[in-house]
Image 1 (cartoon, rainbow, N blue to C red):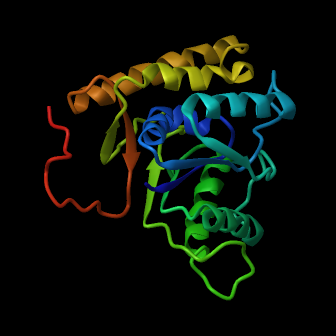
Image 2 (image 1 turned 180 degrees about the horizontal axis):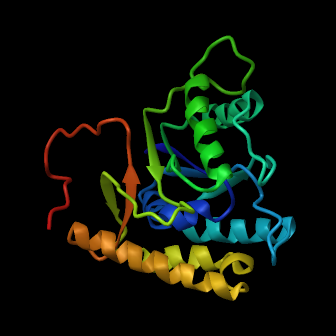
Length: 228
């Protein structure tokens, strides 16, 4: 099985963007670690302690482990220090696949997270550097969508999450301070559901999540392709 690292700017971004895929990968026996760059606070109804409990509840629903770097929320910067902290996690987890937010976004923390993660992927392979763990270069880096842009995702592959829609929803509403208590945010849960159904319809399944890659995916045969 594969060691997988899913990096999010704030607790809940991974669940929103790829909660169904996370659950499926976990069910398949892969070792999935969610890494939160910040604690996501302050927010109108939240606080660090409550958000941490919600994040752990969401991880339990998805069947994965979670770690917090606790870098500054709303002030995340692609510094050498931040890069090395992420590179250290990559090495400790021996991550072979990384998922990070799509690189175009209106939220500065999201943009910074992706830049940090991309650079950390490179640094994680370096020898003669003061980082924990053994050097490793993750073979794949994929982008998931949790953007703050009013913009339609343009994925180049979709992951079938049929049967996992409720677990994804449960992992999102586990963040009561973000998606239950704020009335205006409740509709986000329905938007996500509709989007997953739409992307599912593009490949002839009930629900799917969109992803992007800058690096070509190699196929040895066509048996794994989902066709309408």
